[in-house]
Image (cartoon, rainbow, N blue to C red; front, side, top):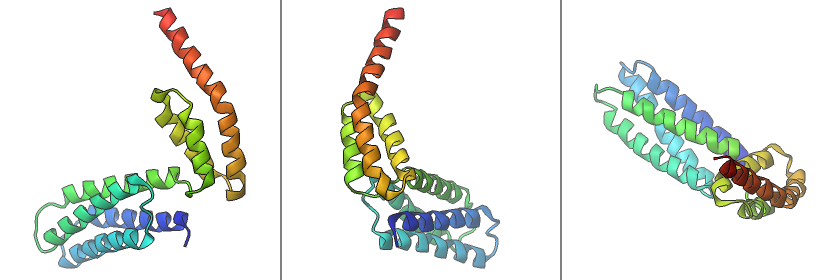
Length: 171
């Protein structure tokens, strides 16, 4: 299973868990179902071995905490609202990772070079944009596109610095 498919499967489980926690959960069976979904989500992330992205590891830690909280709350009648908020943040985090994810490889290393020449305060933004562009391309077009990004990154750097200088001069 490819990394993209694993992430899609994990995201689907997160949406399912959020839906389950958004229900009434007034029956023990509903709570058991929510607990099993949280457990399955944790296991899916562990089986997927997709921890090359720091953001996914942070989401995984939230999943572990949520799974534990759902288990504790399994027989209790306390509110599931905090658990729902946790599930929602996990889903949003996974969708962000899925949207900006790029298979590890040469193209992503080339993009790192393109981002490194940009001014520091612009690197995060353009890094995300460049990775999102790569994620949308077929695998065989990623390296040529990444090389194009490097070739244009010096021009982008100059434009960003010029825009900043112009903005400073106006003040």
